[in-house]
Length: 204
Image (cartoon, rainbow, N blue to C red; front, side, top):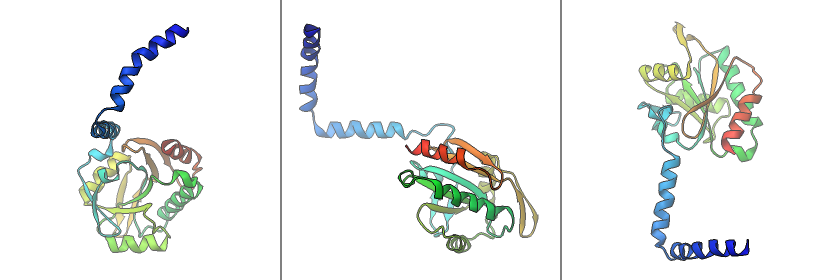
């Protein structure tokens, strides 16, 4: 056994010496390549969508700008008086139950299904009213076509039933850091345990 270990050391020693004397720039380059490979976007990622969205702060972003974050998403509209307030409460409840160490790379995202009414200014006011003013909370509005496309990705159905009212699915979706759908919960006032466990697993 001692001779066997000696032979392995004899083989590895030149490799270790070569590696220790290698160009530090090459090490950095290899590290960056590994990071690039980790962030490769699959065909199942929402980061492939070319849509541009406007935030509550008036900034234009693409979904791929969120790459590297676990995303907790829901589609709402600010003038909703029945389902949406409960969905907002569910999102806040999920946030409140997450351990602080698991919140660093989590974004809670509200996507408006009424972009005509939900201007950035209105979304900003809504975020303030609901105490969702930190960088962790993001409100998005897009074009009608982009909103429809995104709703289809989330399997969210919605329909305008009056000038200020929509019927819509009540679904909270969780995406991993590469933008791939991992979990959905449907309904209002649901037990958020499975959703929270998914987020914790994705952020550990």
